[in-house]
Image (cartoon, rainbow, N blue to C red; front, side, top):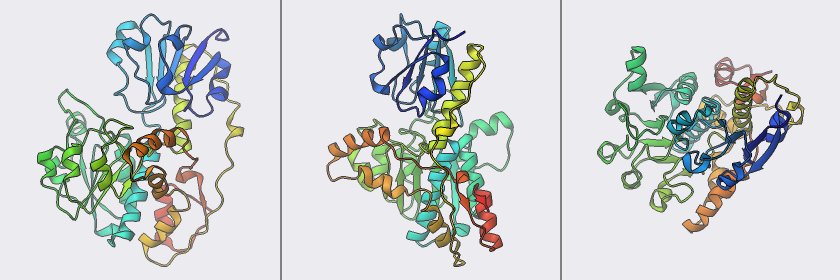
Length: 375
């Protein structure tokens, strides 16, 4: 029985009360305000990315289970949790589709605004894990040429067809999707170092929707590119002003914030906690979710980039996230950065959007491959 349990949950976890309440008393707090004092009677702690989970937070508390509804691990001291015998679960892959959709949406928008064809473009994906695989699948569906780089996977899985980092950095568009590692056989901190960035040419595009610190930000700010798309930064929310001013699209670490991604993370942690407490899951809350998106009836001109941009704009507009924090005063941007993350508007992943078939076989096939419901 778990009715006497107490769960402390980041209040940015959507539907926390509805999902977790039958497991015990749910206390929600802003992630940055979760302290050791607030965990004095907690049996389980469920966080997103804004809580540093370590000895300073958990020492002397009764917490025996920590769940993270996001995929990043740099805020979790896993060695300490293991030492204390605290069970840890991370919702790996929960927001992969959301991040991939962010990347592809921006690439399609750039194809129109910068006047290039997707089928003529080479896309380098550095880190081909949960997110990178999704980006690769969607980009391939649009006819892009892929340069895949992932030394750990190549070593562990004996893969072929991958390229080294220098080759990847020759692509027209470069998007990074590695974890942030400071040590080990394949550290990724400043993987794109000043030396690597010195080889970047002004016609190239760089996207970071992975983690701040994978790219050397000081060097990146001095690197001429066709466009920088930046969702992840070092020292969030106090992002670097010089780099910020270079970004065509600058967003506050929200690429994985589609409602469906957040719910998936919550459900994964919920399932893991039910298993840990040997409790039968009770799932009686999905009826409270927002209504499904309206049917999209696309117009097809025969120009893939223009047609796709118009359709994707009915699902999600990265420029609105950019404008939400865009100011001339970086201090104001810092304030808006965290506020917007905590009050992020709802948008749904593509599979939630019904789209009327156009009868144009190539376009319909592309939409189907991207995950849309064709009706």
